[in-house]
Amino acid sequence: MLFRVARSREGGKITHYDLYKIQEKKGMTILDGLFQIQDRMDPSLAFRYSCRGAVCGSCAMLIDKEPRLACRTQILAVKDEALKLKPFPPLTDAPPGWDKKTEILIEPLPNLPILKDLVVDMTKFYKSLEDLKLWMEPLESKHPRLQSPDEREVIRRYVNCIMCAICYGSCPVNFENEEYVGPAALAKAFRFEQDSRTTDPERYGEAARKSNGAPLCDLVMNCVKACPKGVAPGGAIRKLKQ
Ligand code: SF4
Ligand code: FES
Image (cartoon, rainbow, N blue to C red; front, side):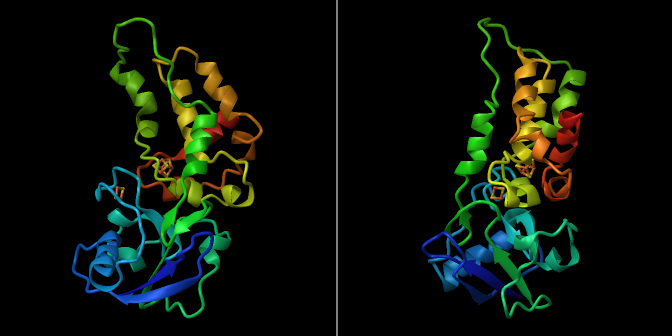
């Protein structure tokens, strides 16, 4: 299989694409292919990873024009799986010469600045969580905050978020509007609003419904289709809007 990989040594924008021949085996992931390039062909290729098991959220990138985790996407399955996202320019503008049948196209996650090659600057993504103050205030009491199975079930979907920013990179509103806090932050706000242990639930909903939050969402639902952990941020945003 051939990998056509976006390169950007100085960051900022993609400057060119390099083509690499990968010796693939059954079960090999896109991340394994990138290791092969780095080990045997081009040590200068930059990409981010940590856990290799869809837990840390570090390896999100655009694979054949779909935002995915590189460690969870098998090379031999890429051409068979389609997320069917609503298109916007980063998902449709293909480089000249890309042969869709024989090459896997690998690019950095959209909607965040490129630092180098496949590594994006996540500052904006994390800042949206910080701006909405998405954490729980500590209680003065020393008692643990217990939760019943039913109470836990209410937030189960949302606590699975691994902060990979795939929803952010798949969202046409984030592409068009720099101000929009994005799907993950809003899903997290909804989670804290619903969490039985929260002492001040109103503050999360209020923060999420500010002008740069839920009102900007067009309910496109790319985030629901692309999220690798089934968080379905779009469903939470719909409830916040209601
Ligand atoms: S909601 Fe899903 S896609 Fe978005 S950051 Fe969390 S795990 Fe990633
Ligand atoms: S390397 Fe951790 S999620 Fe892919």
